[in-house]
Image (cartoon, rainbow, N blue to C red):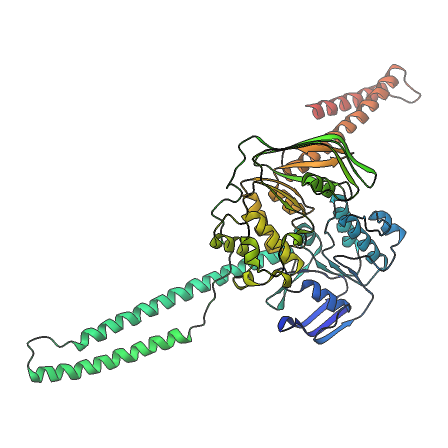
Length: 552
């Protein structure tokens, strides 16, 4: 029998006059892997705080039956980490100069070191590089306790979770099965909702048309034919009155049916962006940006030397590399905003027609907190308000949300405003540093669509594998203080790596066969005691045939 690890009942939480959510019941059993998803601002992190005991609910109870640890989104871990986890996640001594990914590694190592029965992880993949993501997935997969995971990393959700909690509209919906099962069920529900809405609208239209025909019949009955005698007119009047009463009764019946119909809401769907973004002022030349870096140093450490890269006009380039290699440092230098202690020696040749937009990890500095969401995105927009509202809708802002002041938004919502603002400006070159951090899954999918169809040039850093795969069509990677360019997306690069690995394996296998053949040849020339020349020759010929097939 599975052991109960967590039980929560009648949880209510709000801020001011706004109720965030009310949840009747939640249970977590030992060994369960539960993914928590939902739009930005619905209270996923708040729910983790309540369940872990870090914050009190307005109403309700939470009972924990075992040691609990939390991987928070930010901050310095209170506990030290064990040597094995420090080594696995390359944990560093906590200091201000640590990169976002290095801070995340420290928090993961500290949480796992406590060996909890229940691990709560709030976006633990934030800022992690490929090696860090691989290690996180491996360690969480091997974790023996129960797991509650808030994540926008779809690959991680697919790999780990066997159950999904969707927090939306103030309540949690429990979906048994993994992330793909949730997506399939969400699509089935949406299709069913669309079918019911279409049926509702068709029946509503039919009843209205029937009522209109009855009204027209009633009007025609009232009219007595011309040249009718008095007795005939009185008879017609009685007949007309009876007919009108019958029609009126039938019409009231139709109206009652219309009033009693269960109202079916139209399913929410993202509007299409019909006008291509980023083409208001196109770059006419073949290259949007060319960078020659003699050296890039930060804190006295050399990050790059004797290297460079170019951005072809219209390309969407992902800048990749290990945590701490210098991706953000390089982007800051390109944007003319180098951090203190950073030195760039080289040339940055920006096309004169380029209009650059910069999204950094402190994007909130570009926003005016007292102004509304809509006012912020319209401030430098080259598109009409109706189009700006469409972009905001794609980014998950409902009609009324557009009029909220930015100061009341969550971190993820502020990121969406900053991104929408950039997309609506007269820009043709976007430099984006971790635009996917803290975005919900719905917004991630919408942003992928917007950037995949962007008419300008993009250079971006993201550790979200699915996002990189869908948006980029080329890559520039930090490798041994050099920038290595790959013309092609992540899928092509992975296939190439697989081909290279297979080729290396084949070469190694051939080398072993050739060494064995050389040994057989020597033994056939000078047989050892017990050797049978015919068997040695037979094996030699068999190995020669294997090599021929491998080369062929």
